[in-house]
Length: 229
Image (cartoon, rainbow, N blue to C red):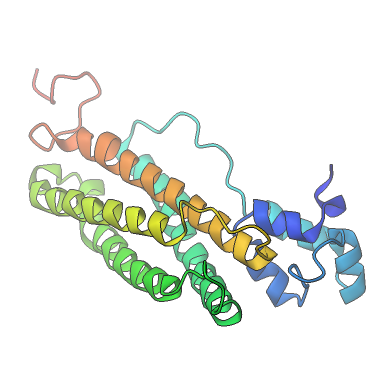
């Protein structure tokens, strides 16, 4: 089915970040989410193909084979994870605040989730800035032999991020909204589940692929000899 023929509420659930686009264009994805994208766009006088392009760009394609060169791998991490986390966490905080405000009397309301996500965004931003300002430039400049301490620090912080993901799962009952939850609530939990998957993959690629290239004397080796012949 073409994107333009899908119900707005389904798009909101399947594409984390879509809610921000709908909100910006004043498209109701919650109470009137049964309308197709085409119908919703027409009601607002918006070109459907413009909305389709924005929505399609939200879903990154599969990573496929990872680059073997550190510079290309770092560029992929920045594009696929750092940029995506920054955009999606802003929207998740907004969605969580909305759910907590509207459903505060519901027994399954995720009270405290907005504050937790905001804190998570701040912690992750601090972590990513350290990588972008210090570690990644160091690795790109060929100074891997000096990167042992920064890498160890990043790995330690990755453990802390993993603990945060466990708490995120607890706050969202393993990303499972209650029966009858509105589209906003369901979109929130779908976005949190995506954050969980993305951040775990992000950490795996850094710990086990990028950092592993520098684990032996800080030297990148394509032949497996640590650069010593």
